[in-house]
Amino acid sequence: MNERTRLVGWATVALAVAALSVPWFMWGADGVVAGLPVWVVYHVGWLCLAAVVFWVFTKRAWGLGVEGVSRDG
Amino acid sequence: MADTALQVGIIVGYMLVALGIGLVAYRLTDRTAEDYYLASRTLGTVVLLFTTFATLLSAFTFFAGPNISYGAGPEWILVMGLMDGVIFAILWYVLGYKQWLVGKANGYLTLGEMLGDRFGSLRLRLLVAGVSIFWLFPYVMLQQQGAGTAIEALTDSAVPYWAGAGGITLFMIVYVAISGMRGVAWTDTLQGAFMLVMVWAAFVWVASAVGGVGTATATLGDVDGNFLALGGGLYTPEYVLSTAISIAFGVAMFPQVNQRFFVAESKAVIKRTLPLWPILVVLLFVPAFMLGAWAKGLGIQAGANENVLPLLLAEYTPAWFAALVVAGAMAAMMSSSDSMLLSGSSYFTRDIYRPLVEEATEEREAFLGRVGVAVFATLAFVASLFQPASLLQIGDTAFGGFAQLALPVGVALYWTNTTRSGMYAGIVGSQAFYLLSVFTQVVPGSFFGGWSSSVVGMVLGLVLTIGFSLITSHALGEDASVYATGAD
Image (tube, rainbow over all chains, first blue to last red; front, top):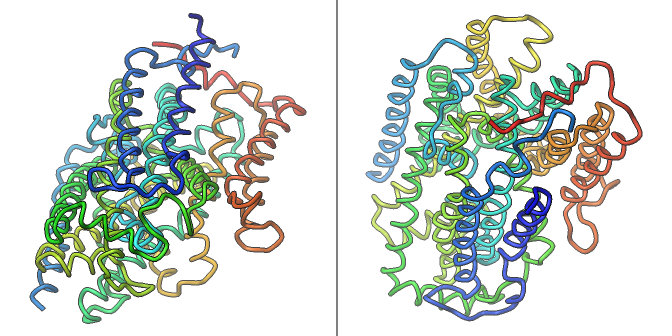
């Protein structure tokens, strides 16, 4: 995969992680799971997933888009 | 009475510990500005993570955050998670890591210095420092006001407001002047760990007192407006997104946070910190804000100007524990202010005083930095005695004001065609737009069914920066190559 594809790929992942941090599709839902509102439980799960995604990013793609920007731009 | 003594004892105890840490840090300090402001860029993972975290969010966690959850439901958990767990984490990489590389390569200590050098413009540097201090100063004033009011309430007015706020101010001057970034970061770390423990202890304690987490949460369904349901009332999708986006970008430009982009010891530190952001945010804010919401369900009565968390704790936990949390929250308030003082002083001495008045040596500048802390804190204290309405307003809208800086800075860091004129247009244009929305009716506070003027201003700043850069060419003295960051 070339640099540009990877950049677009990871940017899409970042956007998706942010966009789905709030469970928009649960708007108005009032169930309770494990003693907490269902959307809080979803959110906790999603942020744990975000942490894993960020960790994978640091292992696989750290520096992408930030390092190696040449002096001629 | 015994409670009061205990609370005061805890605050004094905290101050002594902080001072002790400051003294240890002082002994390790070189007498240079870089060491005073940035601890010579040597912070490790845990310290960097906690100092950034504790600096900005401490008082909000215990007071304002639970108050909002009490009034409108626990959806602020989602706002906070999106804001600081995800968006800020991404900015931590996109802006923070880039700034760290650029700062290390060129020896920058402040945002204004970084921009001024790239665009060959002292005036731009002054503008950025000036805009930052404009929003920071009233925010510091609000902290002192909070501390003064809290001490007055704590001691049943035995210590009047001016004495409480003044005492705290004096303490902070001495402490920050001695310890510098290293000491401040160490106390923040202690503070952050303390906050986590306290919040979880409170969560478990209240839950078990009322018969379990499920029982406490079940009460939310009966609350007027049904706190169990996602959304409703204050919370619209536009509100959630506007707030999270605006504050996350604002946080990144707040001087005490932005300066922390420069202080990591190594690339590995920034790398390790990234995945920890969402975890830390969940760990801290889920229990804190659920407590605020439970307070509503459990029928705690809080007045408009009262903080709900202490009332909830007073109801369900022993007095000593409630005292510990309240005192911890006040100590947390102080730990935010000390970082702001340090950064405010560095912006003032480094970006304004030094270029305009006196080209000082490194030792002399470190000394001036300490004088700056004293001046900044004293002025903010004096302002807090009068509490002018306009300053209160600026302090309350500071996050939005700082958010306006973020996109022009981001563009400058990554796009070599950015010009000096583009930067001026982006910064001045978005600041003017946002100020008009805060202070006048000329620009409305909300657009397109609920998007805040802060977010609209950010987009405007982006468009202006790019647009003006496209139609103007590089001015004499600009050097786009200083932000080049080769892989090393």
